[in-house]
Length: 456
Image (spheres, rainbow, N blue to C red):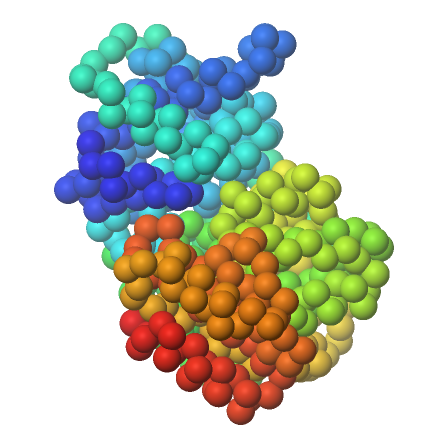
């Protein structure tokens, strides 16, 4: 088994060169063994507590991979509830709906079609990452010498569409006005789930790349600007109220306004913060430390408690759960909800956006305009071999600012700030800068580039 497939938050690799059915069997066996070992004595006696959910995305090899994964789980003695081809957030719902000890979604998310992988969740849909069990699963899987075993567990197939639809639409406010929206499903799971869940709503949906063809018309990553081209063209051509682009497994999204201008995910977090705090004043809202200062300002302005957190869904979900926060937003397009088991969901995010735009009685661009009060560099990558030394050099150079080390090094000044953090998997430093003036942003970016070299 190729150890490089084990990432910080999931398992991913090229099929069949790095991940194949043999690997899937071993990962299934290891996941079942690990997840069941976490149960307390009382929990072991509960219905479905020792079962696992298995789901998959639309990739051509996902069905075969999921079948092998299931066989491995059965051989470890676990029963499996097979919920079929689903979006990843439906897995989080299924784990809680059935009360299983966890579940595995077969997906490579936003990666190209030749990739596949596994997103593993434990009981209550808590994420399993490198620091919360993925190393244990890797150890068990790589120690297995064969993929043969008596299938002691059972398999039950279940279509959760109706129950999942009720769950997603419970967040929709009554009497929303008719809106015209463009949705690019990136040939991913939103193409299946959106028609099933939003079919009866007063919406006109212009669908883009809803079909599952085995390939992607564009990379299923909405954070890459070129992947938004078709969405933007459609929004302008069809005079839509706004547009949404989902990633491959529909747990992330990117929004553009009616003028086809990007609404960065931190500004969407700021907008949604005020929306949530109307109904839950004083609540905690979690955001990742790359986010604009406008997020903190809006949370405080509307009476909430801001909580700044490390980048990554495992950290965000834990912070939201620990603080009993109502909502969390990440620059990557993940949005998390207390009432969705502290998990992220692209479809539920769309529901809340529909509520906000419908209630406002004004264009999306006008809602976001007051929040566009800073200038941001976006995330810029630099190839650096000795990441810790470079970050220490930055901290020393800017030691007159307010410094913290929550994730990499962050330095805050009165009129600008930056965060520089290391990649988990590559020899890269990732830089984000924000300033009150465009000229100042350019000056500081050039200044830091002298320290880090040319961007890659």
